[in-house]
Length: 312
Image (cartoon, rainbow, N blue to C red):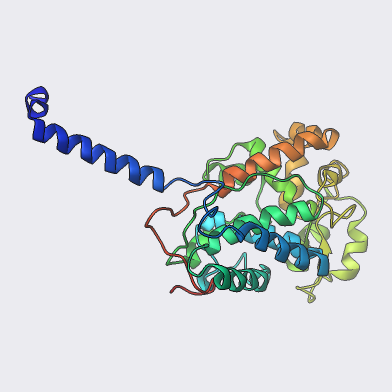
């Protein structure tokens, strides 16, 4: 039956034409490291300059931009109010103003070309580099979502109260292995956390070093919810492997942090990264590439926003 169909020159031509168009559509929907090479050649340099300036002014901003990308990838929505006000993000996710500044600069250079999603992805990479971490190639060509889910943000972003099995499950749902989850958790080598996210740990848990005493001075049992403490007490503004060494000493700030080194299946990976910073840097970069490629909108899906805070 099929051979009879293709025996007609006209039908064969239709088939080949359809296949050709399909391949074009597939190719156009792929991410590429040089996506803006001709349409906005100064895009990457513009983002890097703005990130370096922001991080120079406030080192914590590097961690904030990295976290923004992480949350963006897990929810598949860029800078919409629905995600921003979700429980795990509300009053904690920062960096929107930096993204706004970059977007404004790029709109002046090449209006309607560079997506907010790509800006966030590149800014995360450049933030890590600005704080001493290894670089990686960011594939580009993402488009921005036209919706955001408050419920999705609440249900998919890993909470600081998760157990080891909960973390493994949350990351597995996004296609990550336990090893990749530990590597990505190493992002807590920079940044700070609010008292409300670690209060229970420092007052009620036993798997915590005596440094909890000093933390209580800045995080009372009631009140002071927004008081900050560094996630990595050793080198809070440097991307390194000190985070894993802290876990070995029971100095993980969040419950979910210390769960990675608590007599379970991820202990060995924490030990590996603690003794081999190069291994952590490589695995972290590779996991970031993978995370940045989680179900991106490409081709004609979504839109290129003029303003990253709202749909066009």
